[in-house]
Image (cartoon, rainbow over the protein chains, first blue to last red):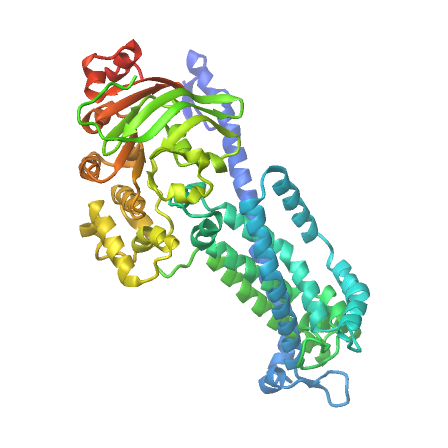
Length: 318
Length: 259
């Protein structure tokens, strides 16, 4: 009499020595575990997409009422009057956009040379223990909470700028840009250093065998080879700058202003949302206008990060 | 150990009592040999016999290799390579071809033009001349002249290896070091490169490290045998194959009894 064994998928003759085939094979269990893990990993991967979509849907839904109704694209991008609480509210975000952009721009002026220099030193020149210690320190720097940076801007940079440049207020583009630059530099350093390290040593040896000096090797071979990663590091720093809230709120002066110099106080998009959202009634026009700012921020950072990602994947001219 | 040779050129490279260590580990010891001008000097031996370390010592790559120590003396054109204060000036005189072709992430043109550009040549016309001459010497010009702007890494393996030869030649080296160049190259290309080397011999001195005994026999005027970090002997290549050698291990190796 034959018995079909479902577990091992074999036909076993009961009572015969072939019974062995009917016993539990470890691989059956392993197969099951395999499938289960596959499903879990799939869920994990998909959940990231689901969350991103969820966030996008949420802020779009909250902001939509404003975009569909009161929103005036000329006013939003063209006017500096952000007066959501006045009798006749106006929603001009230009000063906020310029505020964020100027702070981020200055931050990049500070962070790019700093982080690329640090990455080149750590990746190409530092040896052994120095290198390890530096890497750990840079990663520690990246972990400093942004409110601490804001505190430094408020209590150290502010009086310093007033004294050094003889200006009435030290909370301005210079202060917040500098703070933001120092904040973004560690993560940019880490990514830039990773991309330098990904350049194979054979490239360096080949260039050195051609009599290239250390610096020539770095400039002619290593940096071009790591170019994508370096660009991505900068773009991620820009994204960080755009999205940073607390430090900018504390160090920028938070006053609506089209800056004409680095000593002007400005207000950032993010800081506006953070400062005002708690004061608004859910569903009110002001509330929805703030979410519209959120949509704008989301789209900008999404584009920046997407660009960084595409660059990392190596969109080259050929 | 060097047998006198009729019509031999002057000594290009003189190595005496060379020993190489990585940390506490000895990689190669007791090397004393002379390489003469315009000869192809073969170095054979199984894996881990110190052949590559020997080449690295010649162009002072030990400087950037942590733990690598070189003892003894190496004289290039009568000048101790360890006494060059500007190591880059030394390296400019030595071309190196690595086992796996290292196409730098640059176009074919830029790969060859790299060294002239490092030297300071900016004029496009001058660079064009150098690039064409080197690619022609490396028997690659006809195949790539229409695609000089495409990435070097898009060439086939054999073409890439010839590209690295062209690149090594672009600095007009007096000495060309080849480290098992045929390891990733098909037999037809290997033969073409071997032809190139025979031609180049008239102009430069070549040291050829190979694990193919027959390749050394085809190309090398004289050959040294390294075994497990020991310098066994050096002699006329034919002597190594016809039994006129002293050490039985050499005979055993070239006959393929081990290795």
